[in-house]
Amino acid sequence: MHDFFSTARPTTLARDAMIATSHPLATAAGLEMLAAGGHAVDAAIAAVAVQSVVDPLMTGMGGDCFAILAPRDGAPVALNGSGRAPAAASVAALKAAGLEGEIPQTSPHAVTVPGAVSAWCRLHGDYGLLPLARVFARAISYAEDGFPVTPRVAQDWAGAAKLIGADPHAAAVFLPGGVAPVAGQRMSQPLLGARLREIAQKGAAGFYEGETGASMAAHLRSLGGLHTEADFAEATAGAEYVAPISASYRGREVFECPPNGQGLAALLILRILEGFDLGPDVSLADRIHLHAEATKLAYHHRDALLGDPASCPGLTETLLSEEVVSALRARIDMSRAGAPALWDEPEHRDTIYLCVVDGQGNALSFINSIFHGFGSTRLDPGTGVLFHSRGASFRLEEGHPNAIGPRKRPMHTIIPGLLRVAGAVMPFGVMGGHYQAAGHAAFLSGVIDLGMDLQPAMDAPRHFAFGGVLEVEPGVPEEVRAELAARGHEIRIASAPIGGSQAIFADAAAGSLRGGSDPRKDGSALGF
Image (cartoon, rainbow, N blue to C red; front, side, top):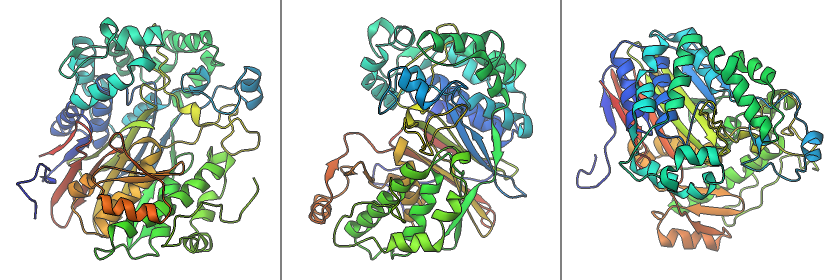
């Protein structure tokens, strides 16, 4: 039973339709589409278009997108809306340009051709019931007439002020008077309103082709990029439907997008954890230790083996096989933190997530990202488009599955999830860069292993083992931190909330919808 003396909110309940996002204006825009009889796709696109305007450090039309749609009657289908590197991109070309080691966030080479708009238009063309002009109406209004900056957005905006100040075009838009806006301050992005009007009129071609596509390509070239108008034009129809991958967790089927996304890592964590008891009687220290060890093993494989799907054929089947999962489980020692290793020992971050269930019973899990806060920080002054930094994930290492190459897609951290069991479906997702795969597993374990309702499962203190450190939110008790440190974990208290999440559980038998939206963000779940 919910404790109404606490400051936590209860899980949201509705009957017919629901949307959950990380921004209140995005939730309201999507709810309008649902109330007008729109498809889940209409609601999601309305919400993400709004958030591309009002939450510019987390997402935008200059980013990438993935989705999993579960039609009311039919099998789930996934959409890969991630962009590709320019045709001229290669490890040799970037090294010749002076890059070594990693591709910097602000480099034009960190900008792959944005895939989000192609994905929006592909989904809308196939499933949308309302015209795009109506779907974009709220976003256009906020872009042209202004919007109030919400508290969490203002906090993150201020933290990125120095970085975006280095690009004069981004600074002109995002730092009025040379400083970041405060909560409640009204901001606008009129050029984005013009882009949305073009897309509503011409579809994806209005973004990737003509003057807009030419302007974006020319601006990136002016910064030293390898982008051409042809690269942008090819992206008009770049979004592709793909078969989702799945695995069972305690009798529930969990769906993720296949590589180049890291959904495979989420499934691998769950498969490893399924071999252990994680019920209510297990101590919090043991629970965190198990999640940390499974995460380290899964991410080690992710980083070594995952990339463009053409570069890692058969990887899903191999890593989710009982042989590999059993070998990885056996490496976990409950008494001490271990170092991750590949199963056969071969030699060798900012996003918005939303979910919707419409009045017809269609469920959509949807994620849109520009990767780092404010992406690459590179803004084209001719179009107002802020470019993402997803290409920073590429490796400058010949032969690596994630090595940059002509028209390749990089490994992506953004992953929409979907759970299905006995007449019920739950689109869910966790924002937070690299945390997302670990976050999927932790959220599902809270719901399934501990029997938590959606909102309490999101509210619970988080932890993340990554980069040799076990980061924990302050809500993890001090005595638990001490026990984990005694097992060899290097503990660090999180300086900022770890990720954010949304979920909607649609139970046909109960005839109701249950939704949650993470308190670490500004958003909400609403329905009717």
